[in-house]
Image (cartoon, rainbow, N blue to C red; front, top):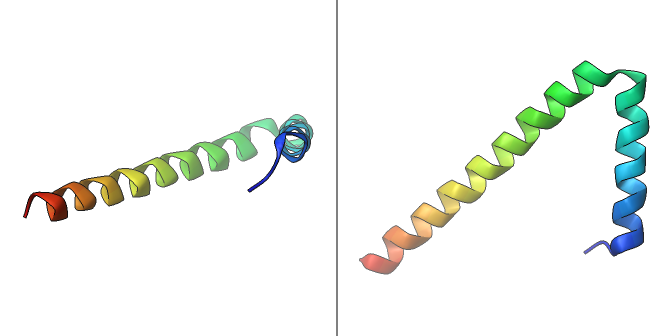
Length: 53
């Protein structure tokens, strides 16, 4: 688990990368976020289904 300072450094790094090539990185980042949310949702649904049975 990262602490606050590492998190801020990562954000700064991402900002720098976005300034270099804003649109491509943003598109990739958005797709990645959507993918992560989808996976979490599927795991959550599967967990609920197992609990009800």
